[in-house]
Image 1 (cartoon, rainbow, N blue to C red):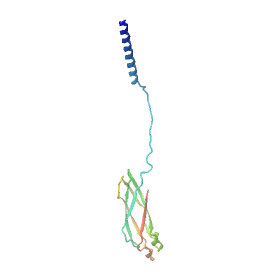
Image 2 (image 1 turned 45 degrees about the horizontal axis):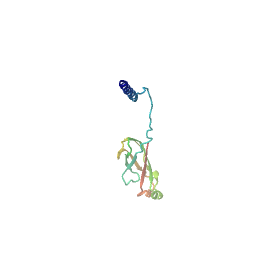
Image 3 (image 1 turned 135 degrees about the vertical axis):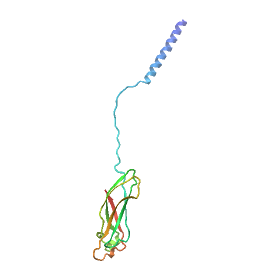
Image 4 (image 1 turned 180 degrees about the vertical axis):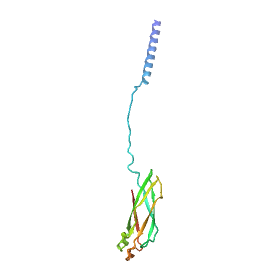
Length: 154
């Protein structure tokens, strides 16, 4: 009987070994297949805008002109382009009430076409000419006026 017990033990051990190998083989099984897919994200609609500055000398008088220097700042994270700079002239309220006419001041748009790098400040963006017409009548209402240029670009 002793021989029969040894055979049973050997058979049980062999069966356990086969079961272990079969289970271990299953842990590494896989299906082969093909696949496809996609991903997407939306690009920013804007990276902000440039801030434009105009600088010109004080003391503009009737019949005279001053050169206006434009600069641009870009606080964004990518380069931005300044196309045409269009200035609009305004006069402070007190001088406008005193008879200073905004129509006596002219300045044409300036084609800049300047690329302003990310995080850049003070980038030269062109020049223009601000003229104060000599209307042939008293323009005393404009003495000491603050002439402001509001700037836009495309």
